[in-house]
Amino acid sequence: MTRTTAYLLLSFSAVLSFLASPAYAQNYPDKTIKIIVPFATGGPTDIMARVIGQKLTTAWGQAVVVENKPGGSGNVGVSQVSKASPDGYTLLVTSTSIAVNLNLFNNPGYDLDKSLIPIINIAWSPNVIIASKSFDANTLKEALEKAKSGKLNFASPGLGTTPHLTAEYLFKVLSKVNVTPIPYSGAGPAVNAAMTGETEFASTSLPPALQLIKTGRVKGLAITSAKRLSTLPDTPTLAESGYPGFEDYTWIGIFAPGGTPPAIVNRINSSVEAMLSDPEFRERLTSLGFEAVGGSPASFSTYVKSEVTKWAKVIKETGAVKE
Image 1 (cartoon, rainbow, N blue to C red):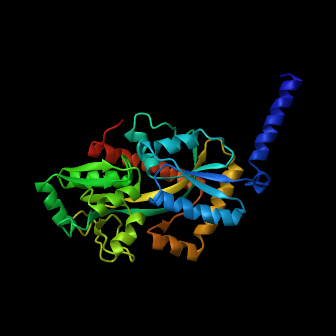
Image 2: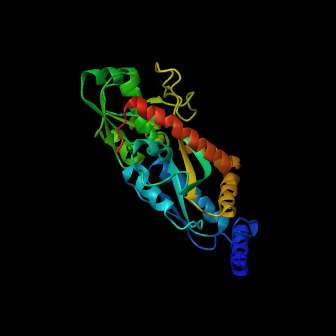
Image 3: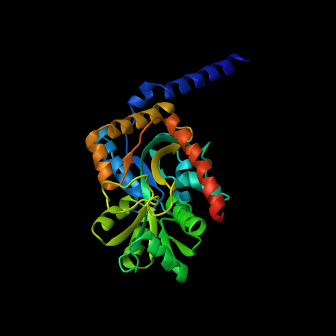
């Protein structure tokens, strides 16, 4: 090894050591941070990104802006972040779809193991089956009977989202009824489709539907949580509706481009963990239909891998089509 080569190796090692050090993270952030949300405005992922962005702006003294990049069931925005500069100034806030799409699409446009780093699982919420106010059924059982005798549609936040797969599994696999899925560009548009009667049903995560159910603008037929929620005491679980063991959640987490320095990953994680440990903030999440989760980057990474396996099985059983 030449003296020049040895010097370069030592210099490179020193740079890597500095990037991983707490001292490097102390200067982060010193400019605006951009959060990419790969879905339309008004959905649970968008809601969570904006809540977190506001808190981080206050905590860091730097602007945190949210940009919505819907398309490809979330793949467009995820792919964009996976190719962004790994400096901590472009982050991704996305849902369970990031794990689902690896098995749903032949080429989702990203490599979850190499091009993205899981930072923290912010929160999760159950999925909910809702119906338009004008639909002539008040319970899930009545709705499924209607579905047997007529051509009905259900809206979802997009192909491959957990609400889409939840409904496909409920209708197609468990109930043996044909309800046509209509994918929308996010949970907000899907909920609106049911509210306006554009579709008879919608399957969505809870947050964008919560207030509409409480005010009677849509009917809450069933929820996928293990027990009824205090915020929706009159909406039965799927288990109560005749489907024991049926429990699904949409989680929302933060990711960074692959190669982002560990010091920055840990800085973001610790900042969000501090928020989630605040009882007042946790209560705010509950009022929005979420349950705070938290945890380390390592624990979130392990959880994401388990979700890839779980939803691969659901995709196979429902016959969801790869594209």
